[in-house]
Amino acid sequence: MSHALTLISHHLCPYVQRAIIALTEKNIIFERIDIDLTKKPNWFLQMSPLGKTPILKINEVSIFESVVILEYLEETQPNPLHPTAPLERANNRSWIEFSSVLLNNIAALYSAPNKTEFEEKLKKLNTNFNHLEKNLSNTPYFNGENFSLVDACFAPVFRYFNNLDDVKEIALWEDKPRTRKWRKELKKQPSVDVAVSKSYPVNLQQFLKNKKSYLSQLIISQELA
Ligand SMILES: N[C@@H](CCC(=O)N[C@@H](CS)C(=O)NCC(=O)O)C(=O)O
Image (cartoon, rainbow, N blue to C red; front, side, top):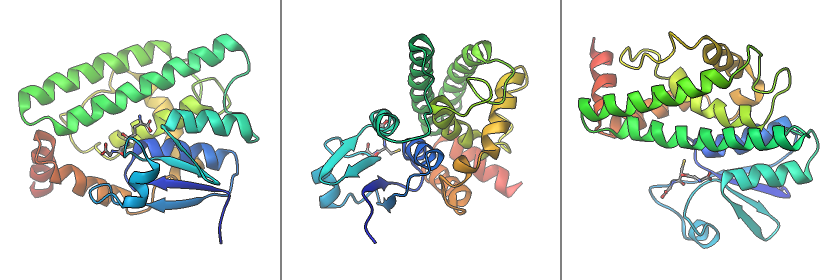
């Protein structure tokens, strides 16, 4: 069966998850094609100028960059996930940008080769999350009672930490009750749940161990304990 919308994906990619969460919140039927980013198929390289997932294919047009995909879905599909007031929209976009920086800083953390660099990256993330905490209200979602694109973008950020709870060195949440509450809320969201497969935790663990980074060592030593 062919669908009008096809999402070219990778099973662990947090940017792909953003798109799937938005598509699911909007009740859009789409086809998902997972590729292996370590062996990028030629057809993928033809359609992806940056060689990155996600790509949203609409007929013969390939849209790249997850935020552009989110904005396109917002403009063309029902169930708005952006607030209507311009200032609130701009504020939401700022925090979506912030979530991209967080994803980069998380990648820097799990790739850090040694304890010193790991602690340095962790400190940076702690500063990021302190800023976030100050900007959160005590509501289920970022904008209050309604799920938005900001929530869709932070759910993949928190998913990393949901799968790293056993690594005691990553102790970021004690002084951040609002972030803790938001994280818990997003974990329960059905669209967030379906954005990855049931084998995601095992696959992520394997990916992190294969990095041969300081975090890989922590995960392995904790498995042996
Ligand atoms: N800014 C891009 C980032 C996408 C991205 O970094 N995707 C990663 C996988 S999560 C990728 O395709 N990496 C392959 C590569 O860089 O070669 C977006 O928001 O879509």
